[in-house]
Image (cartoon, rainbow, N blue to C red; front, top):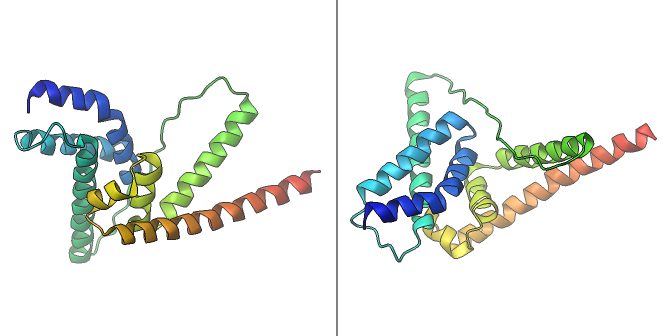
Length: 183
């Protein structure tokens, strides 16, 4: 494995991996740190990596593993020190096309509702949803990344979809009730 191949990987997969890190952490600065740590692990193991293998999948699993370890450390520290950890909530940048202000507002509200619904999921389901929908990973690869059996991945995705459907259905019902009141 060469440094040239590493640079090609960063160019090819960097944005997607950073986006995944941002979804995991929910915050830009923490996402940047996780992203850099992910690539540091990849650089350290550069000699061991197979260029013919699925590099993106490997990087996603490294990012996920680092994030889980960090969460465990915070939880352990919280138990020991009895401190409350308050994570910074950051927004995500979105590129806006030529939309009217009303369309932008509706789109922004829907995106926010979906983001909040996903963030309310238990983290075990949230990871599966992010890998499946955001990173467009097949179920078999998600099982490899997370180290879970395929049946567990399918079950978590099913339950996450069910929970998201219910939350977003309730939201749509509330929006239609508000619109009826205006008329």
